[in-house]
Amino acid sequence: MSRLLFVLSLVGLIALPVAAQESRVGLGVSIEPSILSLDVNASPALTMPTLYVPFTIRAFRFEPSLGFSRVAVSFGDDSNSATTLRLGAGFFYHRRMEDDAWYIGARAGLVRTGLFDSFDEDNPSRVDYFLAPALGGEHYFGKLSVGVEGQVQYVWVGNANENGDVSTSIFQTRALFFLRYHFGSWNSQ
Image 1 (tube, rainbow, N blue to C red):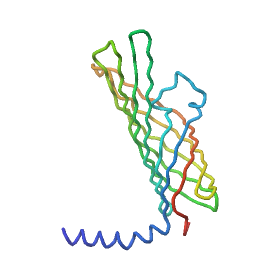
Image 2: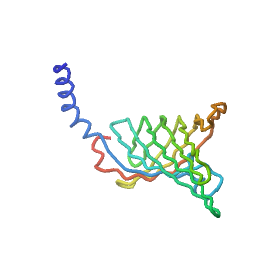
Image 3: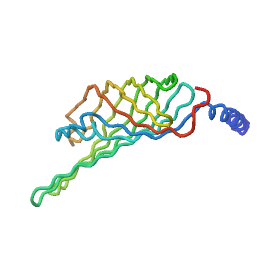
Image 4: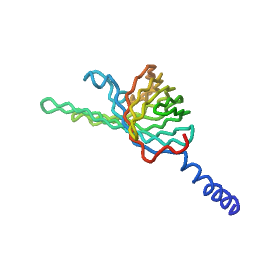
C-alpha cells in the first residue's frame, strides 16, 4: 500500500508542473435572462444567480458551482419563506482558439429547498436533482471572459409530501450569461 501511495505521489509531482503550464483557475458568475425580467412566478431553485469556480486543464474544464436564494413574504402576522441552496459541477471538453473558446459537456447537482410558514409547525424541505447537457462559448478580454451557455435541463423534483404519492419532473431549456475572471495565464493553450 505504501508503494502505491509513493508511486501516485511521484506521478502527481511530475504531472503538476505540466498541468500548471497548461492550466487555469478562475471565478465566475452566471445569471439567467429570466431573472432580468423580475418574474415573480419564476422558481428560485431554477433561476438563481450562481457562483462558479472553473478549473481548466488542457482541454478539460471542471466547474463546481454554488447558488443561494431566499424569498420571503410577510402579510399581517403571517410570514412565509423559501430558502434554496444549489450545489453542482460541470464537466466539459474545452477548446480555446486565441481570444475565443467553446465547450461541450454537462452539469449535474442538487437543489435543496427549505420552506417556512409561521403558522405551520411542519416546515417541509425537499432535495431536487438536475442533469443538464450544455454547450457554451466565451470571449476573452485578457483575464476576463464573457460567455453564454445553452442547456437542456432535466430536474427530478424531490418529494415534500409526507405520503410520497406525488412525483414531479421538469424538462426545460436554459440560457445562461457568464462573466469569469481567470487567474494566471495561458502558456500552452
